[in-house]
Image (cartoon, rainbow, N blue to C red; front, side):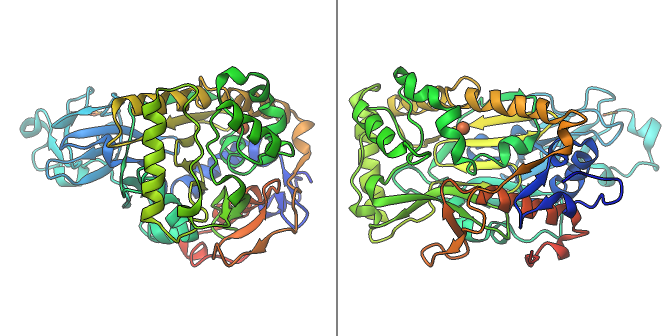
Amino acid sequence: MTRSGSDRSLASLVDLEQGLVSRELYVNPDIYQQELEQIYARAWLFVGHESMVPNPGDFFLSRMGEESVILVRDERGKLHALLNTCRHRGNKVCRYDDGNTRVFTCSFHGWSYDTDGRLVGVPHYEAAFEGALDKEQFGLHEVAQLANLNGSIWATWDSKAPSFEDYLGAFEPTIRHCFDASDGTENGVELVLPMQKFRLPTNWKFAAFSFDGDALHGSTTHRSLSVFREAGVAVMADEQGTAAAETRAAEQEGRRIVQRGGPYATTLELSSRQLGHGSHRNLYEKPIDEIPYVPTWEKYEPPEVEEYYRRAWERRGKKFAGHYLHAFGGAHVFPNINVQDNRHLIWHPHGVGMTESWRIFPVDKSAPQVVREATLRYAIRSCGASGVTESDDMENWNYAMEASSGTVARRLSYPFKSGLGGAYDDERVPGMTVNQLSAEENQRSRLRRWVQFMEAKSWDDLYPVKKG
Ligand code: FES
Ligand code: FE
C-alpha cells in the first residue's frame, strides 16, 4: 500500500480488514499538521492533576499538542487551563515549569493577566489605548471545557466535544481508579513534581500507539531485564511466551512485577474499538478480596514498604469485597496518554519526527516518606529516561522512525495482523473488546479512531460514535 498520486484519502492508507497501515501516517509532515488540527485541537487531553496546584495562585506549565498551556488555580480556588500566549504580540507569558503567582506579566510590553486569565494591566493604557482597547476582549485564551476526574484534570479546545466521561466510555472507571490511593481511597494520590521530560526522535504514534498495545516486543526489546536481574525489575506477567516462567522466577528473586493477580487473572488486550482507548489488563477469576497479596518490595527496600503495600492491598480488598475489578490498572486514552496506576506516560507531538515525553509518577498522599521514596525509586529505576525498560523502547522507536522515512522505505506498509479477526466480547467487561495479549488489537483500535478523527468535519461525525 502506498500513498499514490491518484488516491490520497486517509482512509486508503489504513486497511484494518487486512491489518495494513501505510508508513506515511508516521513520517508525512502534511499528515502530521492535519493531526494537530483534527486530533489535538479537539480531543480531550490530560493537562495535570489537582495536587500539582493545591493553593490559589499555584500554576503548572502543561501542554496540549505542541502548545504550551498554563494550568492555574485562581484566587477563588477555581482551575483554569490557559493558552500560554500573550494577546498582544503572542509572547509567552509564563516561562516557569511551576510556581505560585498573583499575575502573569508578559516580558515584552508588560501586559498582565490575573490567575483567571483576565487582562488586568496594560502599561501606558490611558496614553496609548484608552477608548480603543477593551481589556475584557483580550484575556488569555481559555480551553472550551475542563473536566476533573477523581483529581485528574483534562481539557479540550472544542466546545462541542462530549463530556469527558462519555469520551472515555467503558474506560471511565479504569481511568478514575488510577487516581485512587493503593488502598482504594478516592482521589488519594499526588503527582510528584518535578517530573521527567525528554525528547525522542520519533513520531508520537510509535510510542503512544504501541504502549499498552504491543506485548510482543517484550521478549526481544526487554530481554535485558531477564539478563540484568540486579535491576530488580521484571517484565509484565504474560508479556510474551516465556512470561509464566519468567514471572515465577522474578517472584522468587524478589523482582517487582507491577501486574498483579498471579494465577487468578488472565492478562488480555481490552479495547474500545469505537473510542480508540485500550489496555493490557486482567480478567480476574476471583473477587479481589480473595486474591492474596504478592510481596514484591522486600528484597530492595526497608520492611515498612512491603508492610505498607500489604496493608493497602488488604484494605482495598475489603473496600471492594466481592468485586472483580476487571480492567483496573490503567489504559491508553486516545490520543496520547497512558494512565497507569504507578505512572503516567504522555507523548506530546513535537514535529513529525520528534516526541516530547513526560513521565509523571503518583504516590499515595498519605504514604510515609520511606514508602514515597521507595515508590519513586522503583518508578525511576524501571521507566522514564533513566529507567531500564524505556531506554530499550526508545532505541527501537527512534531507529524505526529513521529507517521508515526514506523515499523507498516509506512506500511500504506496516502489518498490524497479530490476532486479526480474533476479537470477541466478554460480558465481564461490557463496552470493551477482548483479544489475546499478543494481539495488536489495541493498536488497530487507535488507528481506526485516528482515521475517524482525521476525516471528521466536526464532533457530530465523531460522537455518537461513528460506526466503522
Ligand atoms: Fe505581551 Fe506585548 S507581547 S505585552
Ligand atoms: Fe516496552
